[in-house]
Image 1 (cartoon, rainbow, N blue to C red):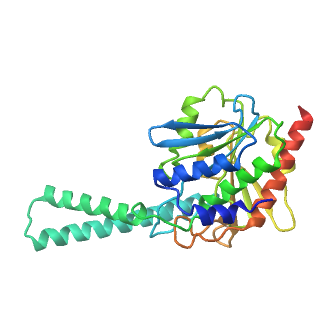
Image 2: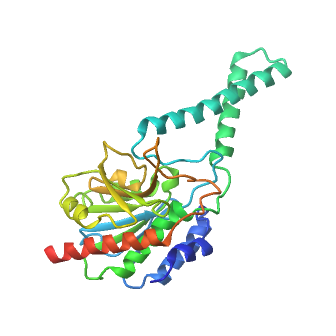
Image 3: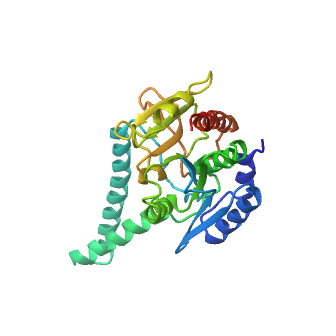
Length: 306
């Protein structure tokens, strides 16, 4: 099977700008000739919908936009909520402290004795710092986030029997707050009510496969647990949305399922490092092969039972 992971990483390392996304969409159109493709656009957000959503029992998805370069790594910790939120708060407090200090310093240098002006200076410094540290610059190292997910979905398109009741979506603007999946859900709320959506995000770095189910009672939950199972190299962990968190596009859907790859640590039980940083160069083709094998088996079993 084609190595989509390394090909996309080489051809389309960044997919933030509208024109870069346009080139990627044209690439998808050239690669996927088995199904009809519908580009659903709302403002500057374009979701790539592949196959017949109406007839599908299962929808596989991944976001194709890439993040900005961040000074502070966004470490994914799905089962360590306290540590994750503590990490986030510490980062925010550093920016707040630096911004307050600089605002007071500038007010002192220029002899500003007006509290409101000092607060305004603080706000300008705070938001400018946040923008420069988190959003301003492109990051070409997105092999895990989320070229790995995109490569997995493209490979699934090639490996799953076309006559299966499946469809595929590449969501746009996940990095701007799950915008693409929210727009899709709002447009197709009734249609997606009973469908299983399996979202692949950051699946390339780590041997611990984390699967988070929004609804453990959904019709295909047991089949998913029976088919996406451990191998000699990979351990699979199933959680519900109260036990683990995965901030990605599956959150918007009743029967959403998030799939992530993590490492196992002593203090932080499961984690994925280097997200949104220049070190996000690690993603393993074997991870994709494992997921293709298990998820294709899942669809095949679903086809047998219909």
